[in-house]
Image (cartoon, rainbow, N blue to C red; front, side, top):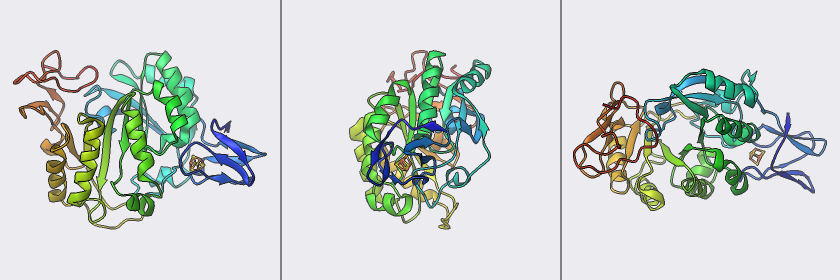
Length: 332
Ligand code: SF4
């Protein structure tokens, strides 16, 4: 246990100030995410240094397509979540109590360094890093000192102050925008859209950001909703990559998988507002990067990553700069 960084005393116990859920936690109780406990009038993070899973993943798996393409990243996860998505793909970590091993920030950084030159740093992923906040903040600081990159894969449901404190140590984020309707957020995820939009807007000022939206048939995949999402993201920054991911039944949701036609329709709509759109969980050419100006294939991901970019990361056909951070593995 580690004392939580964001809380205050309240007439009924403790008010957790980490995320917009705003739990009031009585003595001996835990908050919605199960990771924060009021013990003796102090709030403790129960999952500090508790690592439920780790792997050396391709950066594309996060997914990040415009951040060190082809490189690897040591990926760590814990347990607990401040959402309760009915379709959760990682519910064994988010909503259950998996076995964990102790992994101090020092050890995590040492592991990342030992992983070799193909590893660019540490990704906090698999479960929600916002509710692993104290550990993630401490580890990102140490990782930066060691010359490593930090990546958060998150639902973006975090209050402004803790977000602002951690952003200087974060190099890239993949943020889920689960839908563009507050009703969906409240009913399907137990969250709120406006708070997530704020995180996207704030984070995009500090670090590289990509967005993932899992399209669930009949719930968040209408033409109007997809257009509203893409239009808004385009006003934040039209170079932010948007990944539409194909849904498959999981956890409490039994709706059949997203039809390919819906994903392709969403891709076409979003391209009207954004320069880089991708389809996930479908394979094929929708994972490739095309030049936004002349549509030349610049990064081919159909098998392994093959780059057709120039040495200065421009389109070889029209010379437009392609928005890629870092070295590109497999550059010709
Ligand atoms: S971090 Fe957990 S305990 Fe704190 S407000 Fe959010 S859900 Fe509640």
